Image 1 (tube, one colour):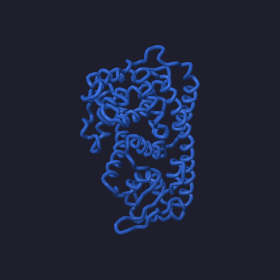
Image 2 (cartoon, rainbow, N blue to C red):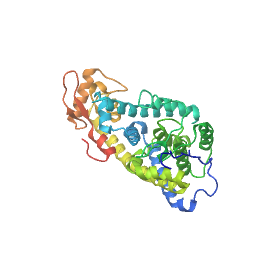
Image 3 (spheres, rainbow, N blue to C red):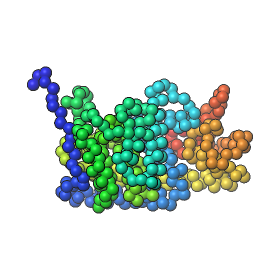
Image 4 (cartoon, rainbow, N blue to C red):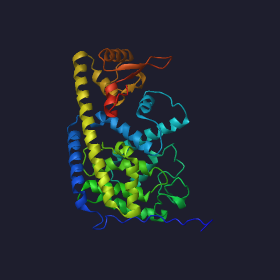
Length: 377
């Protein structure tokens, strides 16, 4: 009727585990088989890798950039790398975007440390949410608290009455999250199916006023790690999800609009397969480059600090000498001599000369180009 607002109806999620018959397992067998095999091969590499946290730090940085970019930030990996080297944000918008990226990384570090002493629980999630929204957009939206207001995912028409998706009534959130947590702690017959259900149900419940998308994606590697599927939580899907963002969001909406869990699990399984295969290829290249360069360094330098410098560069491949963080720090003169030697060996090169109090900016190009899969430097 003209002038009358449409009534909105909050979503009512299924209770977990999903009722028998909700998933068409026969349609999923092939995709799940491929996903499990691809994830197992990637896990094998992680088990064999000397220091996955160091060597796969580009994945960690990339995930923080892309997961936030799905939510609307605009900074890229190079901007983040330059910020780590001491560059100042160009404006307030970039400053806030960078803070969101760094918060994501700090929250993930916090989560990994917390998993050593307690399982994923509502309190765990609330603490993680606080870390994620610390001093960024959304800090005024009750960080660390389940929402007490009705939120919604809007459309171009605007208003809750035209929303693409309306999460459950806020009064239902605590009970829904208790059910979600109990399911997460249980054992499903396929961990990839369980991960898909956990992620989708979290996004459907939308338990917080802000940050649900980022937190939901962050939970995926934590889940695989907590279930022993991966030896370290270094598996991130945001690269794939950003690439297929429309399909990702439509597959989630298909659950609430049509009860179509099978299409969502199929999409998720294919995402795991593609990302695991891509991660495996990139990881092998990074590991080979790291080992070959380390061998060259050992053959051409006599400094006890050379490998410490190399590891610091691997962690932050765009750097100024003042921004380096070495486990074994030499004197400044000795460090400058080592950097000069690395430059002569072609391991690093300058991309900006020193200017005033700001030192020269260096890059180890392969450590940026390999994970980005294109020539950045």
